[in-house]
Image (cartoon, rainbow over all chains, first blue to last red; front, side):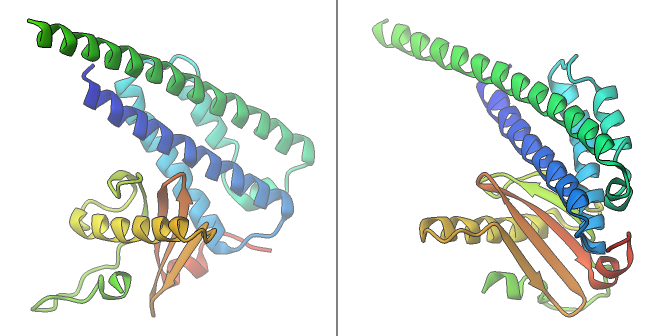
Length: 134
Length: 104
């Protein structure tokens, strides 16, 4: 993978992780039971972005954990803020647990990509030194 | 202000559906992901995105904590939330924003 492609993928994954934070924000709205129809719309949009983006990321990086099934299961567990707000606290905790597992999994993938980025930067630095000395 | 003139037509006016959906942008204002129909011009989205990133950037430079930006037009609403330099931008025609989902 070229440096530029890798840089783009890292930006994409960072952006993706921010979308996951938004997901958690809407879960907290459900817990507080203070939300508007607009929040419901936005929650649906965030889930759409998450599911779409997953395909783009999966096409670029091999991610066995979290798997596509993990993400889809999590999104399916949260059809709306209203649904979540009517769930018992135990279920919300389960959802948060699942969210956390997925979030940490993607952070790990981001970390691996950053390692690759450093390795590539190191290589290109060494090769530029070699070509200068020639 | 750029956001106020974004939808002003240049010449001949044609009736178009207002864009509805969401897109995310990185810190350079580049679109990263989008649920906006492809019929909406990418240039217009980039324009909106770059204005939004510039506003968040300006607020950061001025040490003003700005997390969310809401622009309400007569029948259209743009809500942008800051995401570590980038942003998530929700675009909804006013009718959409009021009807869907349940609320307490």
